[in-house]
Length: 257
Length: 257
Image (cartoon, rainbow over the protein chains, first blue to last red):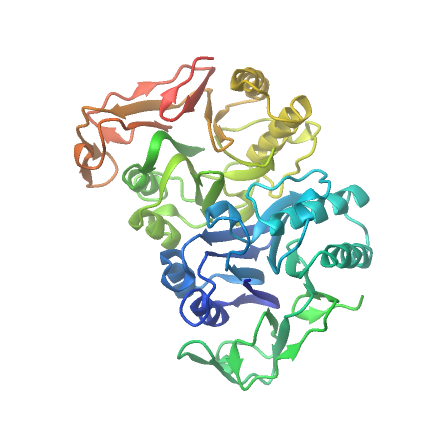
C-alpha cells in the first residue's frame, strides 16, 4: 500500500511542512520505502519530482523539503510496492498526461484486480502498475466523453465520480487527480482532510519533531485544505472522508457537486 | 534563442560535467536566463527537472549539478525567451508527451513562424511557445501514421526526418527528440557533436573552471555522444552537424538511416 498527500489552496502555498511529515513514512516512521513523487502546479505548468529511492533518505526529497516551491495544487505519493510491479522510476506516482492542453496528475493508494485488462483509449501506461492503468483508462474515458472541456465543471465531476465508482468495484481506490485547477479525490477506505483558515494556529507533526505557527506565514484570506491517507499533525481537527465518497476541491474549498 | 544539450550513451552515464558548463550560459556566460529544463531517461521512466529561473543560480540546477543521476539518454535546454511567450514553468523545455506507452521528450532552439496555426491531432500545447506547438504537431502526425510502433525504427526515422524538414520551412528548427530509446536530432543552423570512447582522455569546460579525466570514470567499452548548440569543452574534436541534417543516435552511436 501507499500513502497520499494532496493540497488545494486559494493562494500559492508552501507544502514543505506537511511534506516533511509524510516523507518520514517513506522508510523511517512508515514502510513506504519504494519511491515517492510529487507534482506541484504553478499556473498551467506542473513541476514533478520522482525518485524510486526511500523518501526519508532521498536527495531529491531533501531539495523539496528545503526549498520553498509555492503552489495552489499539489499531489504527493509515497510508495509501498505490492504485487508484481517492480520498484523503478516509471512505476513511481504521480503519473501525468495531457488532455485539453492541461497537464493531469494522478496518484493512487490501493490494489485493483483485473484493471490491466480493461480496454484503453488514447492513453497507454509506461510502467506496469495497476494504478497507471486505472489512470489511463479513466482519462481515456473522459477524453471520449468530452473531446473539449465541458462548460461546467459539475458535468466533469459527475462523470469522474461515476468512473471512480466503476474502478472501485475492482478493489481499493483511494486516489487524487488534478487538471491543474481542481483536486478530485475518491476515497475507498482511507482519506482524511483538514482545512486551515483564519484564525490560524500552531501545528506539530506526528512523524518528526517539527512545529509551525501558521499565523506567521499566512494572511487572513488564505484557505488551505490538506488531504492525506492519515493525519499528519497532532491536535488539529482532521476529518475522515466517507467510504465511497468523491470530493472536488478548488482554491482550498470543497465544491458543491 | 536557446541552447540545447543532448546525450546518447551505451551505459548509464553521468552528464554533470557537460551540464555544469551549459548551465553557466543560463545567465552568466550566456544570455539564456529565461529558465532551463532537463529530461533523464532511466529505462522506460523519465525524470524531468524544470525551472523558470536563470540556470546559473537555480537551486534545482544546483541539485542536478551535484548529484549523480546516470542515464543513457538526456535532453537539456536553457531558454532565452523570444517573441511573446512569457517566462513561466509551462513554457520551459523539454516538453513531454506519451505515445505507445513511451514518454517522448522534446526541446527546440529557433523561431518558427505560423506554426501555431497548423492543425493539431491528439496533442495540445499547455504553454504558449511555438516550440511546444511544433512538438504537438509532430507527435500527432507520428501517432496518426503509426498507431502502434513500427517494427523497424528506420520507418519512424524516415517519417520524422520528413516532418522535421516540413517544420524547418517555417524558420529555424534545431531540435532534440527522444522516445526513451533513440535520440533524434534535426539541425537547421547550430548543432555540434562529439563522441567519447576509449582511449578516454581529459576535457576542460569552456564556461567554468572544471576539468575531468574520463579515463578514471569509464570502462573501455563505454561510448558516449554529446550533442550541443556550441562546443562545451576546449581541445576536443567537436564536429558541426550539417544544415538540414537529421541524425539518429542509439546507445552512443549514430544509426544508419
